[in-house]
Image: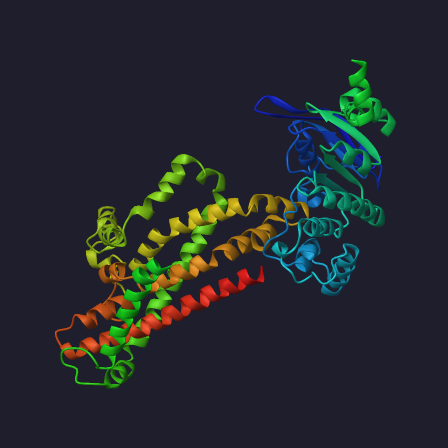
Length: 250
Length: 275
């Protein structure tokens, strides 16, 4: 397996936030993780990114243990819920940031960034500043900035949480095509049931710091704790005919 | 708007026009009519240009050191400074008027001051005259030390505020995640973001220090003098004909500062228009 997370435990002030975390993921796949706010999703991602230290457990990436590797050397990019573009850099420079840091030649930077701008469908926006773009455009720049550095693993912490429903749907489709094109391995955290099912090649559910990875989506849908059955029941109850029939029966 | 014009613009314009007329000899007790003599005299003496250059250098070094020290303190002790007690301590110097700060500096660093006495007690100096000139000195160390003491805490608070509001901590973590090291995060992310948000205030502080009066009056030397001290000296001369020259300096200073302020704010407006 490309990513292997074993027995990770993390507590803050004696309160266990992540309990015995175990999962693995193949290269070029997306594991979507569903969970309510405060269930430990963000802490889990930050531990994998190296931004938080685990109390116990090991993480290996591409067959190498990365427990003691600094965040900047892991080649793992963590994306926050907000786009968090660098406000002092224009769109071109935001996307080029990771390449400039790694001291790529100027010609290569220009070629790669232009190609990425094309993929992100942001032609003509390169010289604009982040505040001049819409929420969806900024989020695309954020993806492009991460993907251009060819990360081994991309960690997405509810990346579409701040977008409206329409933009969110377009961004989901866009992200799917982008990860396929650039063969990205990613962990996609969300609290949206539909999004979790749509985005992941594999799917997991996190509750009170414990993560359960499902064999397949059917298994996930049939498990009552995931809330899928409740959701199906809710929509069935909203069908007017059925509601009226039930009312008459009463 | 009308209130602002009546309170802010009208008195300023009236004072400026009065100073302008005085500088051309059109008003004033001994003046007899329009003349360029006072302007020629001021430019011929070279004292104004010297004072301008001297004031600009002192203000620039003070602002540069204040900003640098404040940036270091704000970034090094971000978490500590957000604690109640330390944030109270850092607010304290802002409540000290410039004149009081100047007196403190004088009491501490003059040849008969606190540190001179300590140096003597420890045997580091055998005579008072061996204590270095730190007030009323050629290098204006006393003035700059006082400016830094008064201004630096303000910049610390400003930078801490921008650090929080601009989410610099999260952006720094993101930069780490993209492969940056500590030095790259500091120089390519943290400092540029903070300076981009605060450069207007830094420039305004430079203008403020350029025209400071009490501190250079107490801690400055006889020549060259900082602009405000020079202007007041000219205006208070026994030789009434010299008063017009004082107004010439005041007019030049007002024009330079106003142009600088207009340039600053028109640039700010341009950025807002781009939005």
